[in-house]
Structure formats: C-alpha cells, structure tokens
Amino acid sequence: MILLLAGSLHAQTMKWVPLPKGTSAGKCVCAAPTKSNLQCFALEYTPKVTGILTSYTTLFFVSCTSKGSPISENQACYMVNKVDVIDGCDRVGKLRMVSSGNSGSGTNSYVEADKPIFVHQVCFNIPAGETITIEKQEGIQFTTSVDLAIGKAVTEFPEYITQTVTNPKYDMVSPTEWLDIKTAAAGDHKTQIDWSVSTDRGIDHFEVEHTMDGVHFKSVGQVKADPTAKGMRVYQFTHPNAGTGKNYYRIQLIHVDDKTEYSPVRTVSFDAQPFTVHVSPNPATDFINVKVSGQKEDYIIWMYDAAGKLVLEQKPDVKTTETRLKVDGLNAGVYTVQVKCGEELFTEKVAVAK
Image (cartoon, rainbow, N blue to C red; front, side):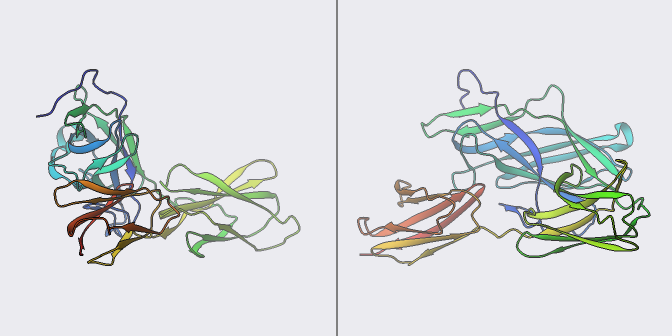
C-alpha cells in the first residue's frame, strides 16, 4: 500500500536531457542513430527522498512535425513499460504521449535524494530546420512513488517546464570568405578544428564556438587573424574538453568594423568509456577485490547476505579504481555484491568459502 506522507513534497523535478551516443541506463541506450534526424532524450528525475522508486506517471503533449508524429521510441529504462501514444497530428497538430513505468525494485530502481536518475527514454525523428515542444498536459500532475527504508512510502509530485527540441538546418548560407572548415578527433575527447579563408583583410579575429545540443553555442577560444596575410590563410584550434557524444562547432568571423559572419557547422563525436565492474576471486575466502573503470563520480559498494541483510558497505571516491573487502569474518554462503555509480547499478553473486 502506498502511503502519502503529511505535507506532500513539491520540490522534485523532471526534465528531458539529451542522451549522448553510447550512453546506457538500463534498457535505454543511445547507439549510433540509423536516421540522421534521430535525437534521443532521457527523462531525468531528481527526487527529494532516498529509497526504491516503484513507479512514475507522466503525460505529455508533443507537437507534430511536417512529417507527422516525431516519436520513434518511447520506453522505460528499468521498469515495466506503461506507455501510449495517441496521434492527433491531423486534428490538432499534437499527440498525447504517456511515458510511465511501474514494478520498480531494489535491484534496478534505487534512488538517492537530490541525485538525478534516468527513468525513461524517448527518441524523436525531427526534419532538419524544425522544432517540437514537449509540454505537460494541463491539470495533470506527474507522480512518483518511492518506498522508504523505514517501511513507508511517499508520493512525490515532480515539477516540469515545457521544453523544445530543435533539429537545426546547417550550411544554408556560406560566407564568401570561407574556403573550408574541418573537425577531427585529436585524442581522448580532444577536437582539432582547421579552417581557411580567402583573405584576412578586414578580419580582426575568430571565435571558436561549441555546443552539445546543436543550438546554444558558447565560445571556447579565440584566434587572432594575420593582418599581413595575402590570399588564402589557414588556421587551427584545439578544443581539449570535448563532451561525450556529438559535439557541434562553428567559427565566428569578426571584422575590424565589428561585423560578424559564421562558418558552416561541423561535428565530431566521442564515445563514452562504459562503466564496468570486475569482482574477484570467486569463490573467496579472505577477501574480494572490486575493480571499476569508466566511473564518472563517487560510487557505493554494498554486500548482502542470502537473507538480504547488508553486511558490508564501502564508499570509494571517483579516483579509486580498486577496493578490497575483507570477508574472512563472514559465514560461508552466497552473497550479493552491488556497485552503484550514478544511474549505473552492477550486481553479482559471490560465494564465500571456509
């Protein structure tokens, strides 16, 4: 039975965030898209309590594109799907999208207060140059149910603000000064940008701009123009902190009279190192080693006995790649080792022998 605690909570949030290529959260995986216009987003839920997320209920209105429904995929990351899409593109220019799930458990839906977790995934197929909106149905409250460790449960009411998703149309106009612009991977999450212009006369400098969403560009560096150059001139810039997934770059050309022009947009992608865990030896007698790689934040190691009782807990920081757990004081039997890092949860059975 779900109990609603006194003073229901209203400070929780839900929002759609881009799911970078190679990212996985349970069944939600953003692989290399088969369609150039495909964009995948994860529903990020930030709770205000710690416990087991057993269900969530949402209902959205999504605007249609010139091709009709933009929805390509709609699925729960960890729970049982409770999804539906009612197409109203021909009648009202919108469709009704239910993105919900239930039957969450301690092995796949543990949440911590104020720590975001991906619960759902939607992939949109948006034609180039078009934008869609994802809004909450008026009068409908989003809800989540979380079982607490004290044997009770709480219903949260996450806040949501209407969001837009754009598939920009690039290279529509190329200024005459630009001869070429190229981007290439130059190491681990490092991008090299090369560009050339037909003349430097009247050019003061170049601003190298970057974004992960293809819309909101920010400057990551500046290159001064060569005022003495004649004819073609080639420039280069290295961005050492590219993100995981698709990175978008453009060059802003600033003239001495403050007039500006933009280059075509170029992209380069970097895959994420997957989060992996290796537990050994198995069976163990005196100790077990827990080795991790690909961790992006601090993580937690739990060890439970066959009855589900917590017998060991360690909280290594993000820099720790190997942790030794002493098990010589435990009774012989089969134990469960769990490692949680962000949205990732690893589980493995380990035998302790005497």
